[in-house]
Amino acid sequence: MAEFSDTGKIMIISSDGHATARMEDYTDYLDPAFRDEFRDFLVEYRKVGSHTFDEPALRARLDPYIVEEWVEQMIRPGRTEGNWNPERRLKELEREGVVAEVLFPDFGLPFELYSPTLAAQLGYGARTQAQIDAGDRAYNRWLADFCSTAPDRFAGMASISFNDVEAAIREIHQIKDAGLRGVTMPMFDEKLPLYAEDFDPIWSAIAELGLVLNTHVAISSTSNRWVGTNAKPPHPACLSPLFRSVVVFYVQQIVDHLIWGGVLERHPDLRVVFTEQGSAWFASKMTEMDYSYNGSYLRRDIREAIKHEPSEYFQRQCWIGSSLLSRAEVGYRHSIGLDKMMVGVDYPHHEGTWTGGTINYLQATFGPNNVPETEARIMLGQTAAQVFGFDVAALAPVVERVGPAPEEILTPPTEDLFPRGDVNKPLSGATIF
View 1 (tube, rainbow, N blue to C red):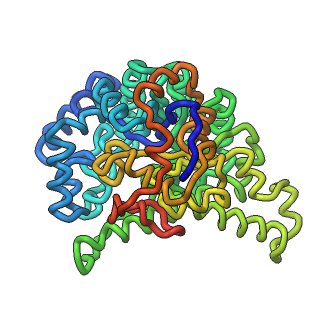
View 2 (view 1 turned 180 degrees about the vertical axis):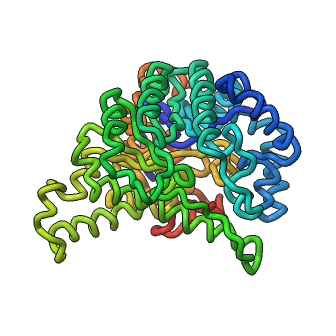
């Protein structure tokens, strides 16, 4: 029987959550020049639009009975309303034992009609660049208001296009002043990759302002290539794994661009988080990159630009938002980096921990691995507090009120609590859509 200390409840900070407004609520946050155009868009959105967690989007990728369970357990009771309502959000977090959360944008920004998987199925194209930029500014204003309702408990990640470097830097300063704590890396054109020196002023601004550069699957990418296709797959369900393989490849390639592209060398104070893209692959990736640097036939004069082993840059500047981590990943935590991994619960997405319960999810992943309490506390909240600047003292009363006791999470379960989904994901796998 494991022994548990008497240091109190466990602090759980989710490194991965999503918040967006109800579409019509963006109107007042948009620049006035875009409001008439947006009102026209709303007419179509009210007919066919949906968020990622809405029933139409879920039916494009899940079995009907799972969709019905989600509607019954989450949508009808109003549990997904925390996506735009901060008071409801805190209520939902607390019932799951979570005290604070990092908030990302989601599909459902201004001028976005469909979730990505549904858009791929329907062959729906992207927004114009002007709509993207105006939508980002509106979203950031809305998110700052959302986070201001509980600034000790929400860390907002801004949505910013880097298409116009000077405009991006102005927006970075504005979101800092508004109280947001990081920037979500966007998608890049392959003709101008993120390691191009054109973007150095952006990395400098983020680092100098003490913001976090965060990457997230299906939002951040080394390519803005559209993933839709005109070819008909053998079955509609095949689109989801085809879509997944593309977005995972391009988001995981970001670490190559940051290290081999010299971004982390040129910007040693830039802090980067890799969220919801799996975590086990970092261990083999760093081993592979270090071997390329030290033991392969790679030219030795690469050291003129890349002055340290790749793993040194990772240790110095990078962390992992291990959203929906698997039982296998928890068992591999020391190889991945115990002090690098941060748990995420992915509210309000279906693949998150919500329908089965966050405490059950954590027990299903931490319990079988006999994780010591000190290590669990690091992964569940302490690292996230350090990286994103949460005030642990301010959170302490909430932890003692809603946090789980150590034995609720660290005692091995007596049954398989999550027969489907990420708990049983293979070690090498990224997030399952």
